[in-house]
Length: 148
Image (cartoon, rainbow, N blue to C red; front, side, top):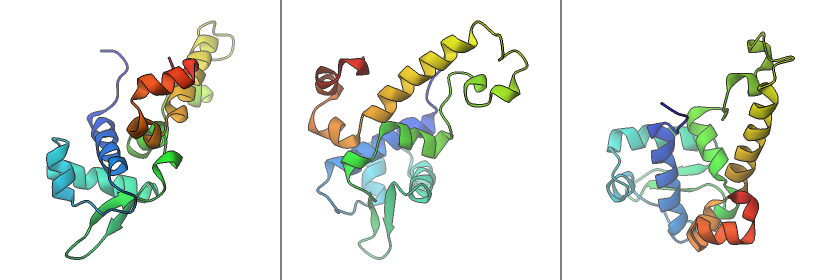
């Protein structure tokens, strides 16, 4: 199996996109988000808990409670959402914890991992939810071909 997002990150990205598509400050019920994005409600509740803890989503209590973005969609990146759910993003452990690999100094592949990590993070940190709502990623790539 290759590198891939966890199911939690995938669902979190779906949920954040749903919230970003709503008018600013609109509160969305857990059930509405779960249903619209085809995510089990209990799993979505755990995802929202992590997103609230990371400061990406605001939780609203009461009869009309639910969730909304904690910051404008243009200030929330894809990288932040993934990291809120899965922790630091790394192609290889040695990239973020070089001390964990006794081969990282002098390893000819290490530099490749570092460069690939940088390119991946440039893409993930360079795309906001406002970008995704305003125009699909194809539009973002037209503005910044480095996102390819």
